[in-house]
Length: 134
Image 1 (spheres, rainbow, N blue to C red):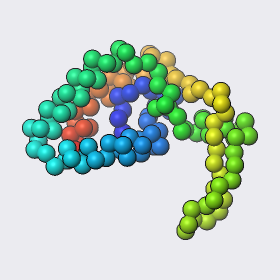
Image 2 (image 1 turned 30 degrees about the horizontal axis):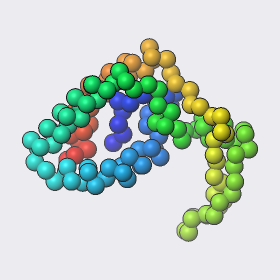
Image 3 (image 1 turned 180 degrees about the vertical axis):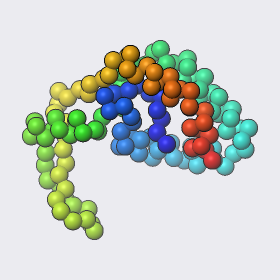
Image 4 (image 1 turned 90 degrees about the horizontal axis):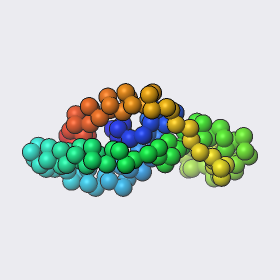
């Protein structure tokens, strides 16, 4: 499950790499919470939602959450920021690493576009988190 309530980039979703990093960092916490009673999970979710509400106005466009997409990859290819890497065992073909150019910055959609999506996502936070902690 991806956290959908954060800043929306032109991609409109959390990149898989960032999602994987978040799950790797917080996987043990999620595993722990899955073992707890529903009442405890609800208290933790309520606290997370309250914290998100209190800090929402402080968060600005977050380029970290909008990294790793096709737009960034195309910018790296166009800038010649590619290099061949060893192909993982069991895989076939070439592996090419594409880095963004040093001056790359993701584009963000206008607030009138992302605000309705953000509000919808916020309305679904509770059910999304409960599903994740089943």
